[in-house]
Image (cartoon, rainbow, N blue to C red; front, side, top):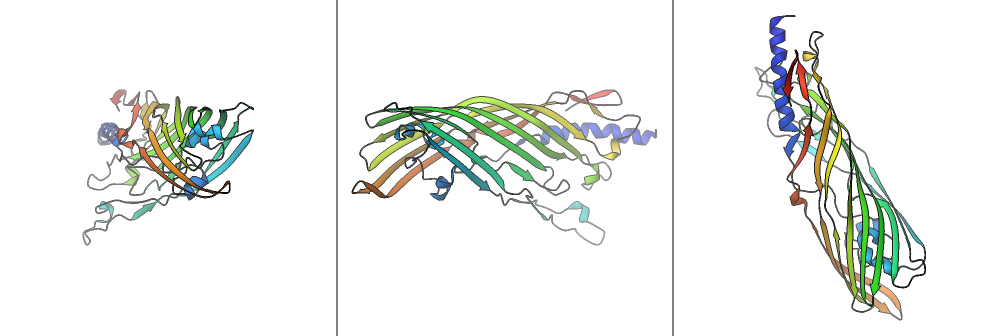
Length: 341
């Protein structure tokens, strides 16, 4: 093997290790992963839909309201979301700089993932018990679960692809004492995630970024299950005026999966192919606590509700999500020497 080739490749792996540590443990903007709100009726009312719930979707909105429901009831709901997300990297693309040109700015990269369906199933029954309500449900958070960008796009060092699925199997119980309603929803938060991101390892030309020298990191099959829940309370001052409060517990995920590195051809030499000594990886991410407070007025005439006005304030504590971290267990081995990631 040419000594210069050996030296060049030996220098590459520390760069890869550095960029993995910088790229896979980076700050995230505290904007949250979900948006208001689940169920089509809630979306249609701008999120102001809690105390007006007349079906077993109360399991999610405020479990205390299950005490309003008699007999067996079912709600099947489908939200379909589409995320129009663009990434415009600042600065000049160094690969466009020539002796005759100062180069051009990066282009705009767009999310290529299509519509994301979010089905929900809610069931309730009071089993003939006065002042009680029971419910079962399977649904997910109000979010967009996929993002796909070009592997060679300007955004590649931030994200190439993400697939995130969170499923919330739920069981709820509620009890009413006069005008006071109390409820709790017990849940398992089941997280399934795959992430792709590119690591810069420019060696062909030290002054330019080159997709030919990039390493693709696939963080695959990340899974975790954590207990969580929703607590709810509601109070009816009269048939026309009611108030309610619900609290969704936060979740701390530690999802275990595998790390796969696809190295550029520049280091795939027969004499010393780089390899991972341990491909284990863990994603550490937080799902925020959510508090909803609402007041509702229903205009009732001759025993019929003609219209209602509901005001709701929602607080989501996404500020606790200071960063998103992927921890790796192994090292990269090249020429028999382990290099820390």
